[in-house]
Length: 325
Image 1 (cartoon, rainbow, N blue to C red):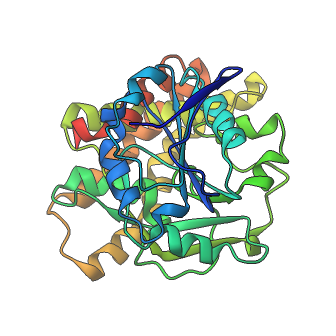
Image 2 (cartoon, rainbow, N blue to C red):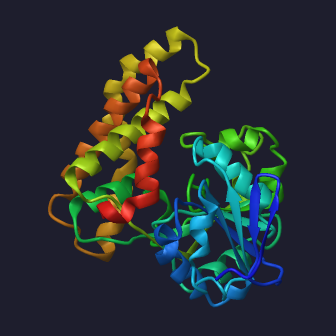
């Protein structure tokens, strides 16, 4: 159980220990059962006592049934907030975090025991953000590999590039760099937000640490896989074009026919790299091609019709991807 808690404004703070954390991992959830598997991996860290768990939930009382599962961590902070919009919820968690390094985690991304130690070491000096070494957490099917390669192919643990722009999820940041963005932080942390203009061009301050490994679960069930590809593309297109004039949105809608080819070409290197380590399932390339088509369809609709219910639909997969994996 969490030892003590106190209410501060709209935030419920829960503190099992009083150690000062070096790293805070942020995760959005609806109850403790959703993050129990993640918590098991956090408490298995070689430096678990230096890790803070920052949880955003609209139902903070449901998190009190942890039964001592988080006691090995430095502390747990629970932010009482709606989970939508996602960018606002994540920004609130960054502000509530107490460590100098914050990780934008997920319920279905499970770090290896040396993950926290490797990230903290990688953040020495002027590094603003670190991309971890991503691995496929359920590698048996072609649909799993297609989603993983499309979403995280640039940051695979097998890739040895030293500097790379961080992914939207599972990257770690110097907290001060995010706080300095002020109200723009929420825009950058929303799905499809992209890097804030103030951070663009800081490639030398972005690092890839392949030894900070994370096993990421991916959607496998056919209908859910297709829906995730479509809604992800629609959300990206809508957010990307939110402030564009109609003429530009129409131009990008017309150019969406090229998106499947462009996304496939971008993923081709990741496919080749993954094949060096293992035999991929038989239909992996076909699944990547299908995923690119579904994404492009959603992106095209997003340019014209906006995001619609896409963020709410994607939240289901963000919270409960284990159900579909």
